[in-house]
Structures are given as C-alpha cells and as structure tokens.
Image 1 (spheres, one colour):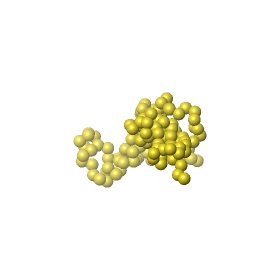
Image 2 (image 1 turned 135 degrees about the horizontal axis):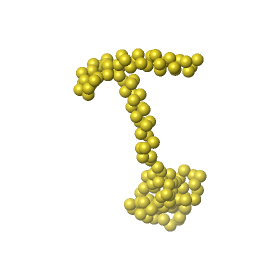
Image 3 (image 1 turned 135 degrees about the vertical axis):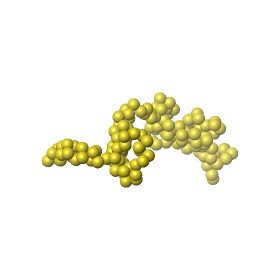
Image 4 (image 1 turned 120 degrees about the vertical axis):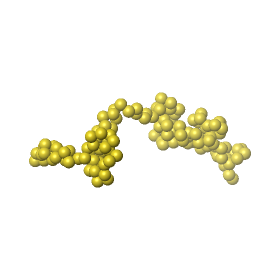
Length: 135
C-alpha cells in the first residue's frame, strides 16, 4: 500500500508537478520571475540544495577535538573538572589559584585559560586553589 502510493507519486504526480514549474530557459530569465513563480520553485530548490549538501558532506573537513594535546591523561577523569583545595595558614591573601594547564598568560597564577583548553581538547584540567584558613 505504501509503496504503491510512492510509486504513483513518482510516476504520475512528480512529472506533472515538474511540467508546471516556471523553469527559466536562461540565467537572465530568473530575474523576470514573479514572486508567485519563485514560491512555486522553492520546494524544488530546497530539495536540490539538500541533495547537493548530502552529496558533498562526506568530503567536508570534520571538526575534531584535539585529544592528542591533553594535559591531564589519568587524574580524576571521571570528574568534569579537576580542582584541588589546600588550606595553608600563612598565605598573604585568602585565596590563590595556580595554573596547572600551562597556558596562563600570568603563569604561575591562573587566568582561567584552562576553560578554553578544556573546550578545545575535551580535557578536564583546572587550577590549584590554595585557601588560607580563617580562624
């Protein structure tokens, strides 16, 4: 039943639809098409664009995560981000974040460069946070 319907559409209705389309004979004739003629052409142009994209898609460059540039290879990989907190009594400031991704422009202090690194590579490295205990 379904295949018969599809067969009827392809054999009978599609040729009739294509014959009624206002397909210009030259490129210059496209400029003379009316709005209603363009609207009648849209479904066909959409299908042709989709088929063209599906045809060239396998040859388009694929975006790959740079897994070969991971810094953290085995530490707490089950966590979305590795952050360690250590209480140190004699710090001058209450909190200090030290870089562990080696990408900070203010190294050794963290400037949150690990966020971009993690997005690009899929890594989960985070800063070392030293906290001064308040008594």
